[in-house]
Image (tube, rainbow, N blue to C red; front, side, top):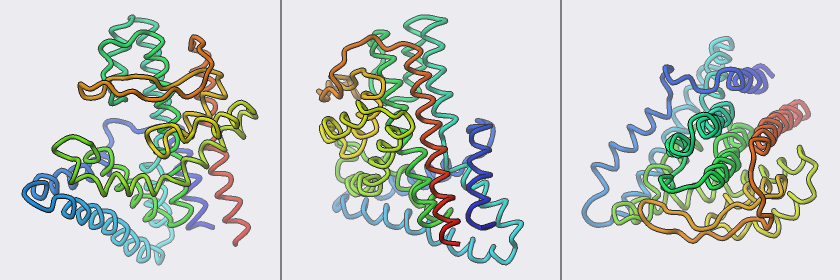
Amino acid sequence: MELLILPLLIGFAVDCLLGDPRWLPHPIRLFGWLIAWFEKRFNQGNHRKLKGALTSVLLVGGTWLLLFLLFGWLKSFPTIYLMIASAGVFFGLANRSLIYESWLVIRALQRDGLEAGRKQLSYIVGRDTTKLNEQQIRTAVLETMAENLSDGVIAPLFFYALGGVPGLFAFKMASTLDSMIAYKSERFKSYGCFAARLDDLLNLIPARLTALLMVLVSLSWSGLTHIFRYGHQHASPNAGYPESALAGILKCRFGGPNVYHGKMVEKPYIGHHQKQITTRDFWMAAYVNTATAVVMVGGIVAVYLTCI
């Protein structure tokens, strides 16, 4: 119980209280440095797809193996194990920061106007924000909250449940690879191909689990029907499921055309209610995110206690 449940509860509680303080060194920055180092040396010449695949396997597998050996050794020192494992869970989750950064966009839009909202939104999304109107900004915030609830909270918890901190951080390495090199640009389309497919595979179950938990905590029949009607229509094999759930819960519409890296991307619409999105919708989404994370943690603890 000390080695499994307590780090989960402590790490999750600290994330809820603190989020990710920007002054605190974060292991994902090390992941980013490693990925950039490999990319600079191997994303050139022939066989880029093979080089990218080997890079992904080495970094994800190496992360898991190193932490598996470390925590295996630390089991002889329960107090130290508890402290480091709790810190690992804390660094592996991002729900408080996701909600806070999303709120900064809404607040900037309300206090300082459209340009401030566009600028703040550009820090958390990949699309071009320079021409978005108020409704599009609010829509982008909610889409980001739904998608990243899966990527940044439920998926890490899922892999913690399967493999402890080593499993959690192996997933985080795969996710960081996807965010850094899995683009369809000329530079990355071959080198990042394997990383993109690996991230899709790893998120297959967590994305659908996230959507179902969102419906559960909101008791929304509309959310459930939206999952089956719209979840598979997203360009991503996974992102559409939590987005569909939230669109159904809030009875709004996501998706549509957006500009990414200078190119217009025609994304399908998710949902059919063309209503104005308000700050109240943001707070409902914040509740859904928080409640979904709490239920996921509670479910993991219940499974652990049953097994013990």
